[in-house]
Length: 280
Image 1 (cartoon, one colour):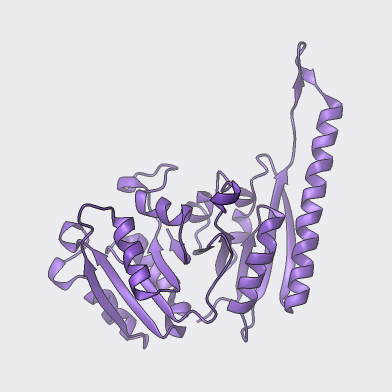
Image 2: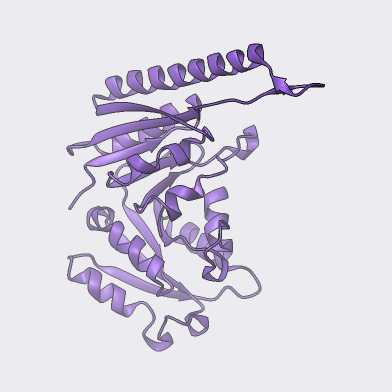
């Protein structure tokens, strides 16, 4: 089992180098086909005061700017893939919202893995407003790279944030190719006695046994968040174990089906020093 079709969702030209570079290292020695996707608006509506009629000149300028952005991202992607010797294809997509994440949904559903880069907050980069759609609507695991695009090559140490939920189970099994290649796997359970889907005395042992049948040896660690948050407890364990990758389920607060991230999900998406693989 391996990832052979990988979709890179590129919001801006700044994503191209870090994402394709990480995938090239990650895919070294494997047969991987990389699809690059960037979305731009399919239509613009600009009204000019005071009579509220379409401003043709402004609309034309916006279309031209969108064409330039699309071409710049596409050219950078093709050059980067050629330099890395990757099998690739470029998919520029027009959508009403112009959001790269929404535009990439159809492509995501035919990929083994989706890769995006976290925004660099220090440079005032904003995450695409609909990036959560890749998790909640794409149906595929999403690998979020740190803002610098760094991904350990090879990925030696993996930490699984386990709470017994459907989402955590999905993420763990979606990560099997990475878990099998890792040198060490740690299953971390935060406050198991507070989790409805966990048998506290046996926290993490069932999933560890399942992984062992895939020839993956995983250690189970239970920790307490104390006065902090679950995200902080997991982050502390990531640092303590020097993990290269975090695997966790993506879910909404109290599992409500809303377009809102749960606290742990949002914390790791907005700022994580290592790559995070999430599934829904």
